[in-house]
Length: 152
Image: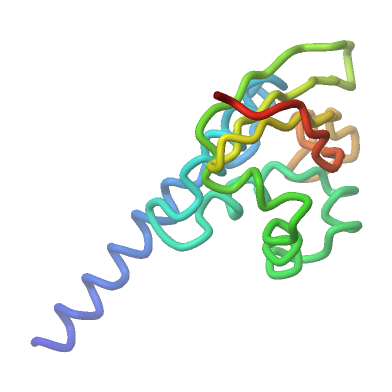
């Protein structure tokens, strides 16, 4: 009975963690995709290790996934110096640059955990191919960080 209870607990706990990951749907707007991604990266290790990176990966466009590789490779990329500033950052602002029917461009101002400020160009496209992501807005590219200033 104890083994059954333990297994049941593990299954329920794992299911609740997976339920926290939002999946792309056609009704999520481009700016909301970025909000989901940045809010997750802001608390990367909640509720579990690299949950923010996993959530961000969920909204990576299929063409982006082909470039960045599977989740494990994407996770390593996020820990590289050029993107690690996004992890556990303290503040971000999303500025819309251009939005049309199938593509969206934003500029992100982000304050890293050490107080340094960076800018990112963030591009999304609507998935046009048939499949589970059809008509979903997903991230196609994020620039390397551009130093802006340091907060005082």
